[in-house]
Picture 1 (cartoon, rainbow, N blue to C red):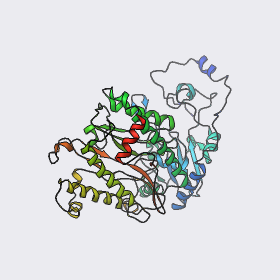
Picture 2 (cartoon, rainbow, N blue to C red):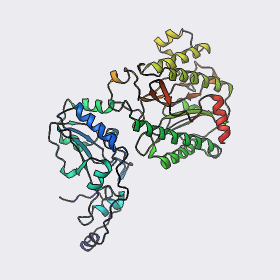
Picture 3 (cartoon, one colour):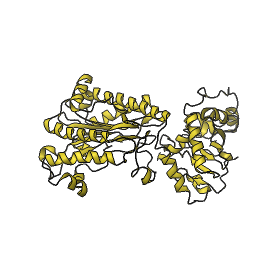
Picture 4 (cartoon, one colour):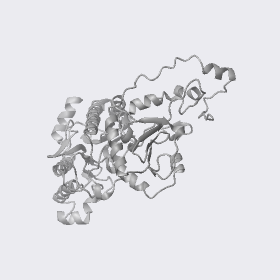
Length: 463
């Protein structure tokens, strides 16, 4: 096999003498963390369910490839969520194949043997001295409890269903088939109901996120003195995410003042002002890649102003109504509609809109101030199961084991002349993570206060 090295500006010419010297004198010790991953038995059940859904077919699920951030610098790798769900593995350029017999084989790129070539010390993308050790075949089989083979032995003979758009080299080797889209949908839909192990991972991610929010509040005095106070707080939460998990599960939204009116404000370059609210939307992603997604809006001064409290209490009441609508058998869209009826009632009471609540729900005029849906499924992706068919997700019904967010909001744009001046520039969102149970729903993020009085007391205890 011809050796292909990913070298760059740090590379230096190698003499024959150095190449020979580098092949000898190594102890050859393997990894020290080789023990079956706790996810392994759960992943095996999932692979079996996938094989049963497509009996007698070859199914191909790649982990994904490294992606260039700039020039010769790659982003930190994260495997495709479907691949992680089915294997618990996390290396790039690997491929899971489920054969027509139902047998699963994980094709991996093992770390290069030091006596065989130069990859281990010259290849900046895959070499052990550059990127750290990858498991060898025996170690991978022990870690993931599945048969493993070298990626160079992968033969992608058709026909096969392929999870497309993950690895271009895999896509190119198997002709596109009509069944690929069905595979993608099922891989998303099979994650809708979380198993016991997944709920535990999500609970751990949420618990770490609660600690990250506490860190942010404690850091407010230092952040006030920085011209990019939002970014200071982003860094504080990011530290917690990296210490207790893999990373933040998505780009944190740290939005002070009118920045909170931007739904996905991730520039996080603003200063903090004592009279403003801060909207913090952030989640820790566990080492197993399950992410929390929590939002709190709190007063930077520690106490809500009267108008701020009025707006916050409306969102609080809307979220409370939405949470009450969660139960098995309810339509997925019901909790959003419950929240929006409360929002419409409030906007009418304030005189911002004059039509009846039923008329407003029909016309959608209220959406000028709230914009988007009030929640989504949560799991390996922050917007989990997104490739599911509408009839089983957005237009489907809730089941025990669904994990989702409930996050109504009000966003009063700073230049909106339909609003009284005192409301302009106020953005509020309250978001919690819940698991649907037989009796309704359990809030995973109950460690953070929601009511405005509780938030003020919580901040006072931390700052």
